Length: 429
Image 1 (cartoon, rainbow, N blue to C red):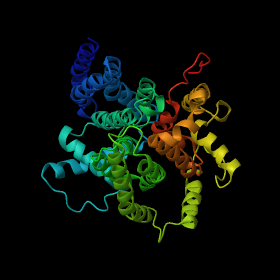
Image 2: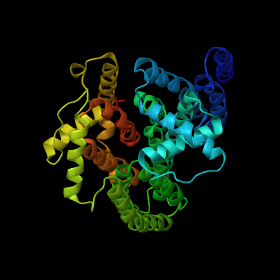
Image 3: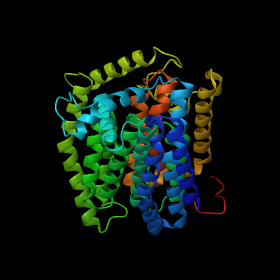
Image 4: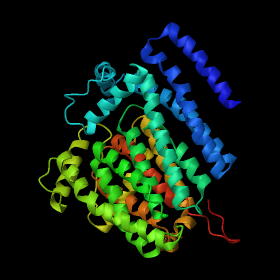
């Protein structure tokens, strides 16, 4: 019934928009129901595998992701901020490229990585749906919805004893996960790529060799847009893979098969590792990637991110105290006394809510010492979180940090969804 009412509302908006706005806006109102319809099989699959409650969560998440979140993000970008958004640049490039792609012309596209890859992807999206900016927001937001679904599927695959309902609510509805990946931009595609990599890792951890395909696709996508994120994924895999080889995975269909999958993962990392490092070297214009050049990249990131508003002084993560304080910054700042406008205050309140969630999950987190040796996926999420904190501790801009945080939270949520301790004294969230 809710889905039917949503469809009626969309059709009414479409009729109104066709008479009062351009295709740049009203085009989105035929894209939204199409994307929602394409999402229904995922919700049905989730309901069959994990129960009707999870199915409803996925269905509601699809509706929010393809309509509510993109509309709000569009309003923020083009009404509140006057169109000063990277999505406007991607849109303009996509408008130029779409007619060429419709005629099968794909030559002279330049170096297809980073920003250029997003411009080409936007052009390909527009080749199908036409040059509707709001529709583009909805498509990219749908990409992030699929990525979140893949993260959820990975969690349920590799950690079936974990708190699946809690993880679904967090990964689908936490404000950062809703807001930042809901426009044309790198965040939406990165959530999709990282979700695919996470599912591939989860399947390999449980002895399913098809995970190699998902992992390869996810790492490729991450490496094309943000190769440092592919390296962070690789760091988590490097630490978790030996545990799979030794134990065969806690939930593997036979320890021998799990060990073989772990061996395949190790072999894949040996093959793909140099390629990922080479991509990162080209992306950052380095002759070689080592501790010295990595520090130079962090220093340059510090310099660039400290030029505009919402800046702060970052700390070096190269010592225990600095790393701990950097973790507080990456995860929870800005604090309310550090903000100067309403938008930043919302980000601050979300950081406080995440801090409260971590505090309320203390008894869950206390079980890490018991769960880590038995759960390769927990090891992956834990190392990924640490590597992310180190890599992004160089940022000196709260706005950029809030946006980048969307790539961290799905891994952090894994740690926050360890099952609650069983016993009469268990009172934590």
